[in-house]
Amino acid sequence: MAWRSSGASNEALIENLARHGLITNARVKQAMLGVDRAHYAPYAPYQDSPQTIGYSATISAPHMHASACESLLPYLNPGSKVLDVGSGSGYLTHVLAELVKPGGKVIGIEHIQPLVDMGTQNTRKSAEGRELMDNGGIRYVKADGRLGWPEDAPYDAIHVGAAAAAFHQPLIDQLKAPGRLFMPVEENYAQHIYVIDKKEDGTVTKTKDMGVQYVPLTDAPAD
Picture 1 (cartoon, rainbow, N blue to C red):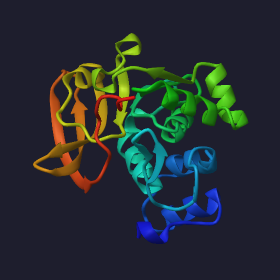
Picture 2: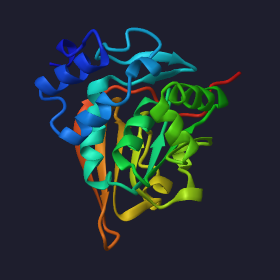
Picture 3: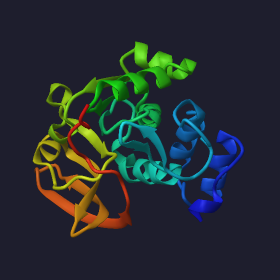
């Protein structure tokens, strides 16, 4: 149903995703309605498909963003702290920030400065985004996402927006107990979403979910 969910406006896109069962939670729907994808996607923003944003990066299809939000939702509450690895154009970083306000914080991490700048500039295109940037609800940083961002750890939820070659232990270490990590992992030339839960006693479980196709979580491209 994903390919049939595109719309002529942000509202139409989100309503179509909900009608086709790709968004099932009212909080997620409201958050996505509140973030205009046109501020973050360079062309055809209301098409339910991934798009290139330059620098060997993409913005994922909206239905994948909805899936990530719904998976992480039990840990996305007012005041929660979230790490968005591979924040790209900043779209999902903003949606996550809508889900954890008031009082929440989302760190978007990218490995090259132009993407950090892109996320910042895109988020400031809306009054809501500017407010979140100014009050600390969203912050973009440049670093190796595979190492997480220890400065603000631990996190209630971590989202990874590129395919990892391994279960990067620093990310698991930076999860709260309880906390949840949503990440695509490459195994034997295929990619699958893994949902990694850390329980209150620190026990970690890894649940394999749907097959996907993401760009790899790698070093910054060579100049």
